[in-house]
Image (cartoon, rainbow, N blue to C red; front, side, top):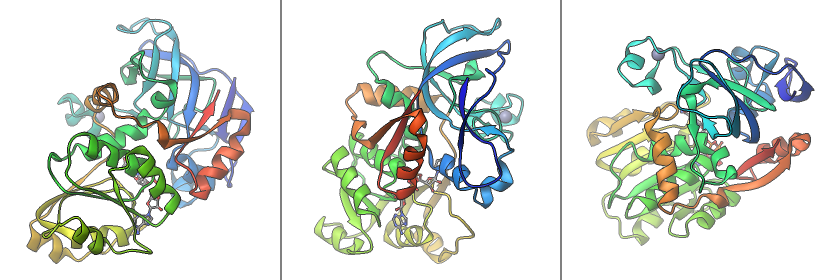
Length: 341
Ligand code: NAD
Ligand code: ZN
């Protein structure tokens, strides 16, 4: 089968022929239809320090996908051949305390699809059936292919009650844009989204024109707050950039008693003014992945209740043109990029 893999310990990614993955008793074999490129795949492409320390070579990469069940392991129940599925890319151990308590998203022994085990940028993927999620008929293949990052966005956004609250989101990457759209959808009052990239801020407004955007290079967040009549500060912050400067400004703009969910991954140690956290009585919550599988059900239902994320997907390529897909992702002039298999 065709697969996109990290074949050499150097920048790049390669399309090659490899064997179809073997099906275990508890697994599904999924024929992949569409995949999306994640920031993680770009790190692997770039072969940065994280990738060098994490990815064994060779490795088929990718973990954002939709496909159709083609074979079913003999112990599997609840799936049928032909089911359209996406899946959770964190394979959890099942025997640690959190797994046993039903908090699988906090498993301490997680294996990553396309990171620690063969991924979805291939004609076929094998995953444990429990990780698969059936996609309702009225959700498109395109949207199903981005359920993994949509799940990051939804899990981050729903960490705290947003109804009637003023919400600051730093970072208008695909995940920040989707988190802003969710915040609007569930009834926040003001949703303010910052970035340093106009392409992405404009894209956010195409997803929902009620999102207030601020390019922090050209304009001040304080001015936007004043225009909105915000006299005290933000109630909830969603840090989705990984940029230390963005996080420091967020801390500064929070109201006392504010709550912050942190998904963005800083590249290195990040110094902050801890007195902001202490004297404002802020609550900080780290976010890793999505809740298994509560976030997945909510993703389907918020789309079915009218959230339209289609504009987040800006580019489609046949897999043979994967290089163009990675190039546009690396340029920052894109939302989600889909590869058709
Ligand atoms: P992305 O890199 O596409 O988006 C980050 C955005 O932050 C970019 O648009 C960038 O221009 C913007 N930015 C940079 N400096 C800024 C500043 N000073 N102020 C405001 N914005 C600024 O990434 P993404 O795919 O949308 O993911 C968002 C973040 O979440 C990344 O850091 C990613 O590594 C991380 N992530 C974490 C998890 C997890 O489980 N914790 C999962 C997926 C992604
Ligand atoms: Zn576990």
